[in-house]
Amino acid sequence: MDIEEAKAVLESILFVADEPVTIARLADALQVERSLIREAAQSLARDYSGRGLRVQYHEGHVQMVTAPELAPYVERFLGLQYSGKLSAAALETLAIIAYQQPITRPQIEAIRGVNCQGVLRSLIARGLIEAVDRLETVGRPVVYATTFEFLQYFGLENLTELPELEDAEPVHEV
Image (cartoon, rainbow, N blue to C red; front, side):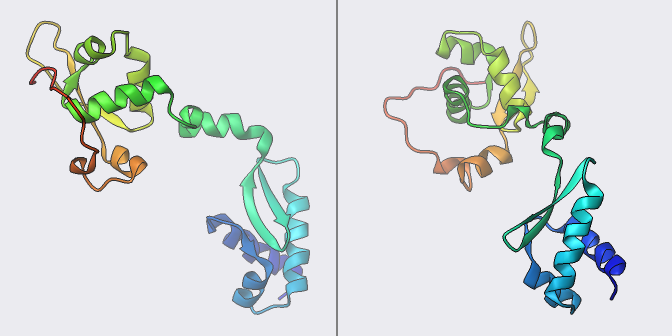
């Protein structure tokens, strides 16, 4: 296998790999010398320089990544601008929804005592809650509930695994 073929194969593997791959593993998979993989990785890194993708080569590991300076665009496209830890307001609102669901925004705001519109938008964008219905009352308020992603985020199999609340009373039946 020559260097150009090694680069093409390496590029294909790195494109589908979801984590850094060792030079040794690549050499074994391609049945070539490690030096050829190192040379191909370094050449690919030069080829991608100044473009939207990069080839990272660090301590015997190789990975294809997006250019760091383009991260804001990628994050916006993927909806990751909401990434990071949940705020205290988001956690409080999420707890109310988890324990009282299905529940409307006015009901949540009655419990919290503050406007929750922005927090609800954030929780929806993160996929932790969703609108599941509308009440047949004045204004037809949206009814919210937690999602499967909520269970995954908190490592729960189902809602019965939520911790018991002390002295908790349901707000309103919906």
